Image (cartoon, rainbow, N blue to C red; front, top):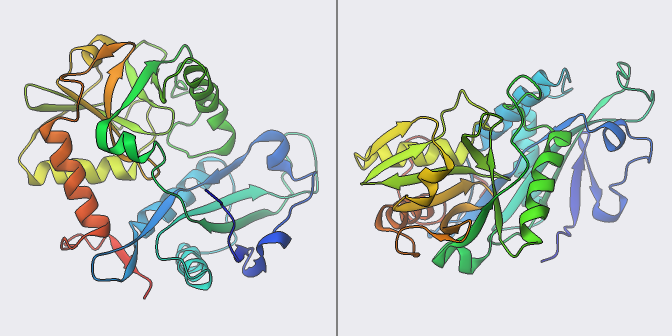
Length: 307
């Protein structure tokens, strides 16, 4: 699927797609200090397009930059508006939105304290990250040999560019072996998250997910699913759990803006439950899609309409 669009927002101005270029000495290209977000806009059943949880995503972008000692030269409101305008100017009804903050060129070396913090917003059409078939019937996953970052080695609550090398290595490792997603353990051997998603398992109608204060990224889709689960009166336990709890789960799924709600049908060649998406997974998935692109009410004001 093409990632091309007509216009890209760069440092406060719109430029044609082909002209959205940076210098080869851009600091983030060399050293990885930057931050980004992944956001989705959906065309809902009434024909209007809405961005899902835009304010929360942009707040996390600013949090990531604060963690990374990068001061964004725009306000959160200005970046929210830039996201909306980029969608509008490209005439997208459904799209993925990628704001990215990075250190520009100037100094080299690690600190580069005088380099400008730059910011771009890019949109493109993107379908199901783990595939339409995966959304419907589930995917195969494998425990990676690469651990998720330790909480005091990398700043795990920051969605920081260079830290994703860890996830890239894990993803490439398992895909080379025929799996679609990597499951990453923390440095103590407990389940952390997938290469780009948070993890939920269900056993005897109780949901388990790794707690926010551990090595996971604080997922906005994760928070959404917890809210939906509470509305269904599901029993929820936020606690660390072991890899063999994955094997013996009745249901398992991963969540993220790109992956949405994707069931896991197999881990390490062990079938999860019946090998098909379970009833609780299906109910949460349906509720999520009804919220982002159906007709469900929006009591939390999570939708930002662009038209």
